[in-house]
Amino acid sequence: MLRAAFVRPSPRLQPVLAALPLAVWTAFHLWEQWVAFSGRDAWLDRMRTTSQGPVAIGIEIVAVLAPLAVWAVLAVLDLVRGARDRAARDPAAGDAGTLGRALARLSPFAALTAIVFVAIHAGHLWGPKVIRGASLAETWWALTHDLGHPAMLVLYALGLSAIALHLAVAIPEALAAVGWVSTAPARRQATLVASVFAICAWILAVQLTGWVATGHGSFWSIDVLDPAATAP
Image (cartoon, rainbow, N blue to C red; front, top):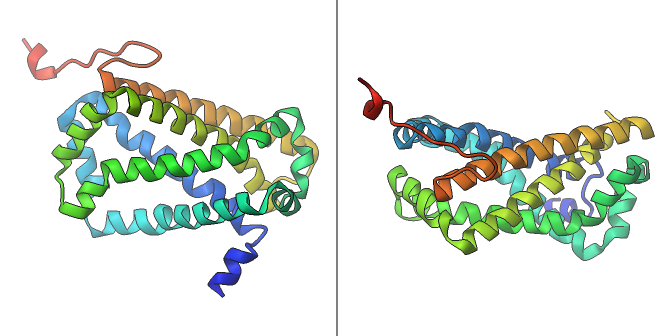
């Protein structure tokens, strides 16, 4: 039965898996990691409440990681089958308008790049914690030191851009698949709204990455002051 699901994925399930887990993961990560601007101690306090303990880890695995893994497998199979099979599952793709069609042409590359990036990101930052029990302090060190290497900055630039592009395409496809978007104007509106969401998420993520990696924001300068050091 499981094999059949991968060979003939549901026309509704696959688009939802392609959009929802990654959108949730992106939004949650932005909320969770944005506290880094308040300093190391604030970041550690946030992570102790969101990424430690069996309940938090279990929710993350069931709600995000497992669906992302299934989507990754289906996306790779999708690339092997080719664009024709993908278009057959989403007959409303022609209603997406000029913007939607332009984004859809880049979608296979964006999906594959996003999958590779998420795997590398998780392996780099969370692999040591799972494999050898690395502390959150060690994760903070990796986050604030390893990301400053030129190769990592290029990787994150490509990966975050791929995630944004993928979400701009996948969210309207998911809405069409579940029947929430059924007309050409609605499809174009959904593409526009999803694109705005993706751009905003990309700006916030790149700004955060730039500050964590180099001590400066990517788009605007941020100076984080230690309240204890500035207190009278």
